[in-house]
Image (cartoon, rainbow, N blue to C red; front, side, top):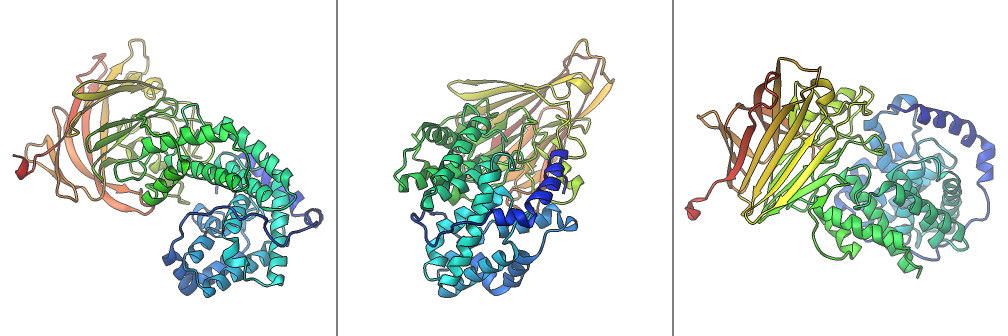
Length: 554
């Protein structure tokens, strides 16, 4: 795992201070035996995962709950497993079974975890993880604890209170980004659910309000520009509000207004299948959870199609929707890695996706992580196999970062978005412009790619190669036609579409789709062309995606 210098320093000093036995003694004090309030926890678990934990994976869970994290294990693929286990999200899956055996297993796992994590550990006592654990334990408290004996309750609360006291001390300087909101959520729950713990509530709310001002943009988008992160932060806020309502507490205006704005953005980000697009490391996510979040926001109705500060535009006509990334990659991104995907888009018709980005999954392979974030992994133009924004080998953004401009216009018969970025200006002296026009019947999307050499640029090369990528969803079947300028696309529903160009060369190549969290083989359409520096503006490359009429429509 790659740590920043700041993270390495914190890791060193935290091990020096928090791992000291004296610090563990400082966390001792008066404990509790019950909760005064059980917060709402409406999120469904997965009974299949619950059954698998009981039947197949229980030894793995016991091992991971007890195994110490060492340097050689700190790889992203290992940490993902540990995070899921140490967050206690699995309690929800065992709860979905609802049997006495699942309760006993839950208590067994909790006791195993306590035995091996009763004092501070660098990974398992991470503030974001503590926040997640508190929420899961309080939300499902009656499931595993109402029938527990006094010995279990004593051990459970003794350990939990130590975690809460530690969280109260570190919340403002350990976690960053969405993890700090999750940590604040845990502290707020502690203040609401435990008697005589109002100080936790106040500190948690103060932290939350500060983070909302920092992380949530004016139009309601999350700073990371990752749709999955946006969804999860909104889920946290909805949960916090629900717990405050249960406790008859006044809802702060900033919390309510943030929920309303973020709900509108989440609706904008949805494809017609109810799931999320693949920008900046996001996943599709579960449609049922997205809908549940939106329902629980109780946000006022009304669609929005433009979020210029957040950096996303949506074109919608009949059954077709197009979602376009028109934001500037940001070095302020705190939780996920920004991608070099400027002006990339995704397109769906009905509940079927046609054009997508590749997406991303966590990996301990640095080259693979960089490839997922490259311009070529997105449905956009790539010049000379170079990213539109520089990404350093360590994963951080370089100094060459694309700045995007956008103009939107809606007419009677079509919707137009014109956008451009200067990510290739410094290196090649070129501005990339992309125009998209969606017909109002939703059956035609026309694109125009324009590359303009700047007059005073000293970066000119005589001939440059461009590749425009159109990554296809795995359920789309592609067939190159004999005219060498068209590709027939057949969706799972047997609906037919034609992709065609008027200049350049077209070909089909292999691609990969990661939106469902696993690697799926798919295809991509590649349009190639050469441009010449003696021409300030080369002829535009035009392409079009058109729905074919079925026999019944002819």
